[in-house]
Image 1 (tube, rainbow, N blue to C red):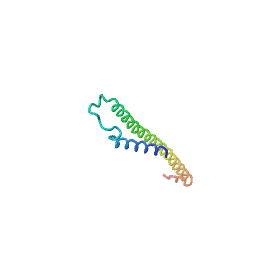
Image 2 (tube, rainbow, N blue to C red):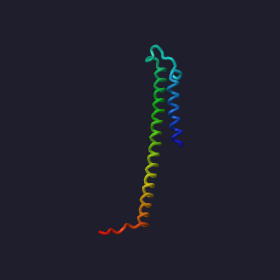
Image 3 (cartoon, rainbow, N blue to C red):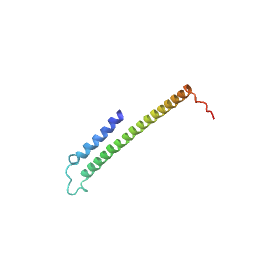
Image 4 (spheres, one colour):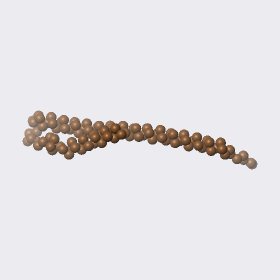
Length: 100
């Protein structure tokens, strides 16, 4: 449950950052490559967006791994139950003797 909350938080944070782009960075100066403050803000902004998206991807992969492990355990349990019930059924009804 915590991983799902973490993933959703990362996604919401990334969407807020992307939607708030004009307000976060502000207006672009005419000579923005020489404006050190704008470049620093832009680099920090891009790093924050990348961090949020990578965090969402990693946490979703962790959710996927956990779900796959749970399904594998459940599959093994169901197969074991099927085999045991099949063996019990064969013990109750012995095979018929074949006459040639």
